[in-house]
Image 1: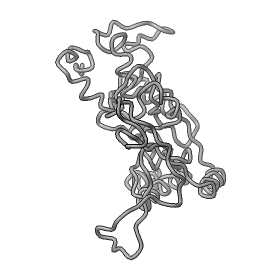
Image 2: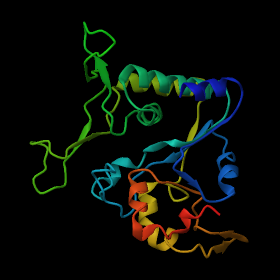
Image 3: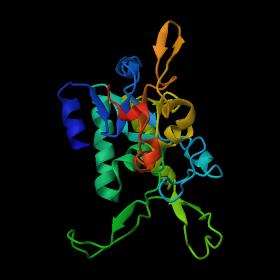
Length: 254
């Protein structure tokens, strides 16, 4: 995130694409840059039929409603201006202060809560090197989801998952005020066009497993339906690489 901040400060727009993002259409980049917001970022909502709670938190249909505002740090576009530089500095600060990932820090600045990380703070009288950590009291308690196994529940903590740890109101009020004063705006890209791992699994049979015959919409031939990209995150890479799936056109770069 520091590198992104430095690039933005030089007046250069940034497109961030993780190595496991598959760009499926030449319309990908033109669509990203067509919006007016400072930042457009992919959704990481859990939608569809994918159900692998161990590797893909909150993918079960019972819990998908808690992920509707989740974003994906592995796929975004930022315009080079001072509002974007401010945003990246705040993301890096949260990562450093509370020991959370870029994904959770971006989520927190945009929406006021993390995804699955519980922000931490160092215990007093501990040196920085090897310091002990505990959940930070600058944040509320996370939402806890029970495991879905026969003997998993909140009481025995088996399979339990903390998620959506919210900022306390004062911190979130400061971020909302700063976003307005800095003029920072953002938009979440629809998961139905910029898909993630759960979308890949859900649409495998209908869209991604077969030779891309293509459909024609508004005079444009689309090989993978409406999808412009797929981020094969959330254990989808391992799922996709099994022997019965390697015939997919996604494995043929041409």
